[in-house]
Amino acid sequence: MSHQSDRTADPATTGRTAPEPPSADELLRLDRQLCFSLHAASRAFDGLYRRVLRDTGLTYPQYLAMLVLWEYGEMPVKRLGEYLRLDSGTLSPLLKRMQSAGLVRRERSAQDERSVTVRLTAEGTALKERAQGVPLKAIEASGLGLEEAVELQARVRRLTAALDAALADEEKL
Picture 1 (cartoon, rainbow, N blue to C red):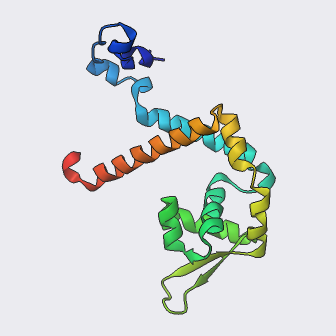
Picture 2: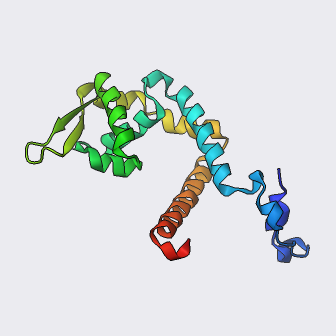
Picture 3: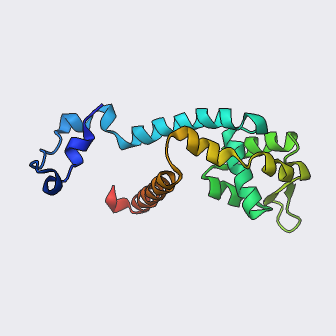
């Protein structure tokens, strides 16, 4: 791996001179790609959550959907997809499996046949108790302290907002 700490050290506090900026070739190394670091962390979290969620019977995407439903309750499937950043082609099969497992119910709106609402069943609501320890187990397994995890999450949220803004502004790309 690269020596990022050497490149980001403040010369005023370390007594070192400012490092040279990385070359174009160095910038094209895999270990220099922020996107890959985030991708690798995401895949590692998927594996971690697979283990941590074993007792709940949920997959990681199902867990995320349950988090939204536990927090906000019944909602249109479209809104759930917006929270989770999933398109209907991904979300519909996920909800179908959750419905087959007895965790949620999907119903077409009487007012608008195009709209489908999703709500927790009693079993889905009861599952929240078994999932109570999941977040802290995941943080503990990550090797981060709670404060460090909260700080990292805030930074990732800022990054996500900046990327969303860049995607919305064609001139930035």
